[in-house]
Length: 147
Ligand code: HEC
Image (cartoon, rainbow, N blue to C red; front, side, top):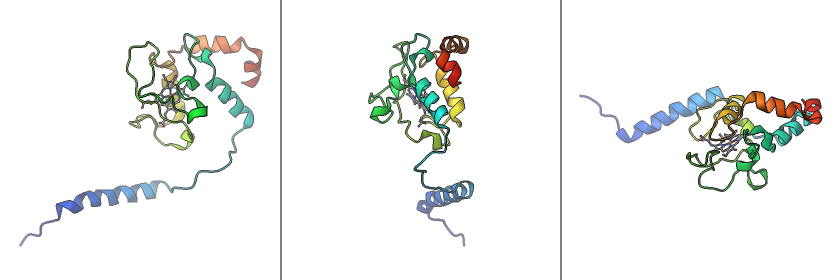
């Protein structure tokens, strides 16, 4: 006699495996209420985040789409592309994003550094060229000091 398994329990089995795997890999902990990050580095990061010189045309900064006074989101159904025709996705909040393991709606990027490089060079977003950005920022004494 063969024993039939209940097909409705199968997804629960997968969920159990997933939960066990995640629990073994990472322990979820509450978000810290304070930061140990260097205040000078944070100030530099905040300045860069709001600086349109990082984009090729000098017209948009990270904050153009991620305004921090409204949750880091632009409130639009889809973000406005740099070329005005390409279709982008909805802009997610960046609050506490430093604690994420995966980035973007599909989680394709796994580090904040790699993500920033992609955003900077993406012709639909910042369309930046590193030599141009470095030249612009190097021309400002307080940027040079801050770096
Ligand atoms: C044109 C609007 C726009 C600009 C400018 C922009 N972003 Fe974004 N950002 C987006 C969109 C849209 C996504 C979601 C992309 C996806 O899922 O493919 C995103 C995703 C992100 C994420 C991942 C968030 C998450 O929860 O996974 C980070 C981090 C981020 N952006 C940082 C930046 C930084 C840093 C800059 C500036 C260097 C920047 N963005 C400039 C629109 C923008």
